[in-house]
Image 1 (cartoon, rainbow, N blue to C red):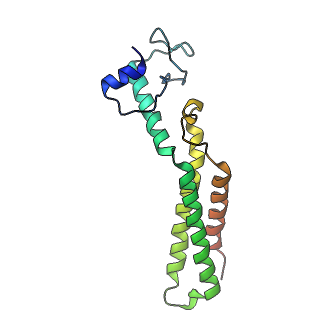
Image 2 (image 1 turned 135 degrees about the vertical axis):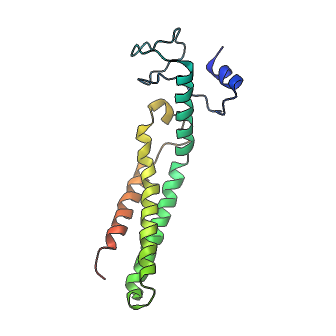
Image 3 (image 1 turned 90 degrees about the vertical axis):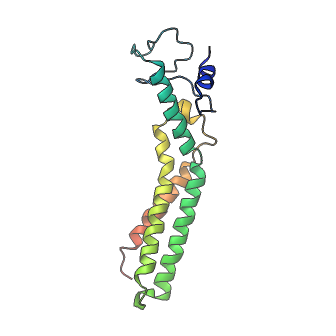
Length: 160
């Protein structure tokens, strides 16, 4: 019986086929005749392998739309720059609402940074799991989001 057949019989929610990996070293155990990893020599159980495959599957599901999230982060940061520019150019500082633009810039900058940093969490995924992502992560957009978000937040420290 194949791993996928066993998963279907067990009612696993995974649709994406995940190769069985050693829980200790990450070696692909497809076709392994025994419950001993040929790479590291550690013994494993089917439950450990299935648990690890499920964890990787949900990580891939979580990281799948990462480029879309980075784009949203860049849009939030751009909105933060617009609010910051309006704050500086229109002089909201003298108004009674002066903390609102600062708080808005802070929130937009932090959210943009968080969404931009998601690209770099993919480094934790093993190579076989990164191959299952719908699209490769756009590191350039991630770096742009981090730099522009950091500059936006630093702009709050400058005197107006």
